[in-house]
Image (cartoon, rainbow, N blue to C red; front, side):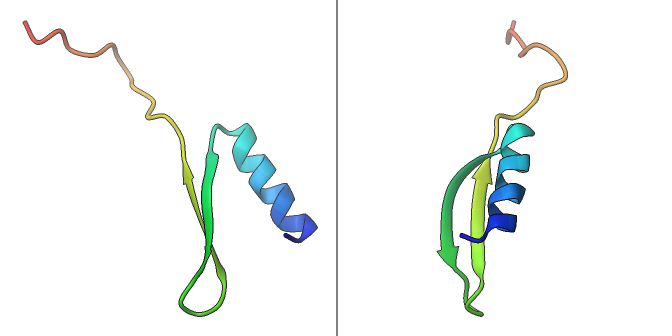
Length: 48
């Protein structure tokens, strides 16, 4: 991985993103899959 790519991924990581996988795309470039927890604006509904 080139240095700039590492810096970009580290920046996303500090924003809460987690790298899941990097694969080669159909055009030969890299595709990164990331995830992070969903931020909720309020507490979950109790259902009652």
